[in-house]
Image (tube, rainbow, N blue to C red; front, side, top):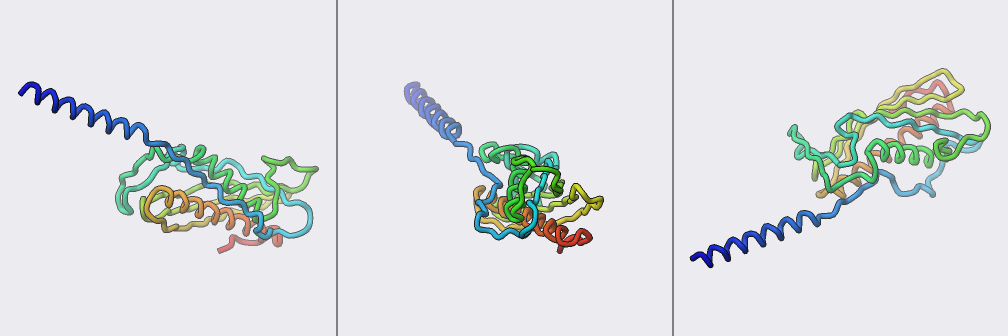
Length: 208
C-alpha cells in the first residue's frame, strides 16, 4: 500500500512539474500598431514647399499606458484582463505616436520633424492627439475614439476635432492586434485629410 501511495505521489508531482514547465515555456508575443509602408499611396498635399509635421506625445487613459495588452472579456462586463504574454512592441503611447506620425507623414508626403529637422523656418503642423477610448473586446471588436488639436506654427488658429471607429475582429489576440492597427491607420488618415483641408483653406472646419 505504501509503495502504491508513493508511486501515486510521484506521478502527481511529475504531472505538476510538467504542467509548470509548459506554462513557463509560453513565449511572449509582441505586436505593433505600425501599418505596412505606404510607399505607393498618393500624397494628399501635392506640390509647393515641403510640408512638415510635429506629432507630440499621445495622451492615453492611465489604464492603457502600459506595454501589456488589456482586453475586456465581454462587451457588457466590467472585468478586464491584463495579458502578460501579449505585449505591444513598446509602450502603447509610443506605439501610437510612432504609428500616427508615420501614417500622417506618408499620406501627406510630409516630413516628420522628429526624424528629420526642418531646413529653414518653414511652417510646421503641430499635432496633439488624445486617445479617448481604445477598448478591446476579446474575439469581438475594438472600439476606438480619438481627438486631436491641429495648429500651424505660422497661424493663430487651433482646430479641435474628434473621430471614432469600431473595428470587428476575429478570434484570438493576433486578430485583435490587427484591428487596433487598422483603427490607428484610419485615425492617421483622418488627421492627414484634415491637415490637407486646412492647407487648402485655413478656415476649414472639422471633416465628417
